[in-house]
Image (tube, rainbow, N blue to C red; front, top):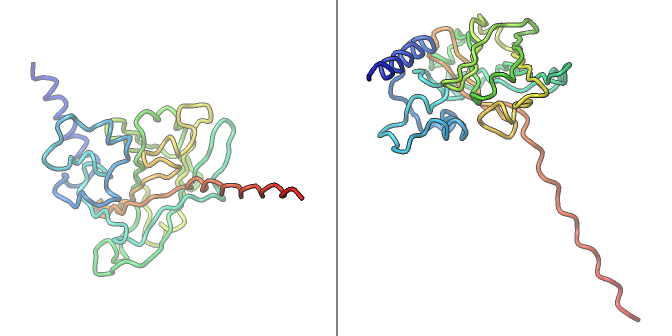
Length: 230
């Protein structure tokens, strides 16, 4: 029967239309920031590798946009001052910063691009661990797409001047399969891959944000030799 195949194809086309303004096309898929986390790659890799990189293996998936971090002045950073424990949860807040340093000749750096949407590269199995999402302290709706392993917060409506300082907070249930960023995000080690979209959705700079684990302690110095007999 061919009905399941047709349904899957239709679902993928619908996901593409919802995620991006234009369908995915050829892009620099070898960018290190664009590739999905190892856990996502293992989940979707087939036994026979495709001739070209699948758009689903690139973050953000199924999008035709400029992913280069230096093509936008905006970055996300984990705000340790506003992150912390809640009753039965852990709060992780990501702040939008204007770090500058991009080429004003590029559209994404022309000073007219705000922030309309943010996406996080997440583990599909962590959906039930996410209790809520807030933007600047106000609870917001979100989409946790388990098929594409993407968490999306849309309709932010931030202008070039109002985007800096915007905080997106994720609340993870303490007693769940994914109580922290190390479990939620495919990058692992407490880091989260994220993308910031402009209103036209053709600028989507990708970055890594989070608190990397501290380095292991230095080994203890060797014990002094015993005193020699007199």
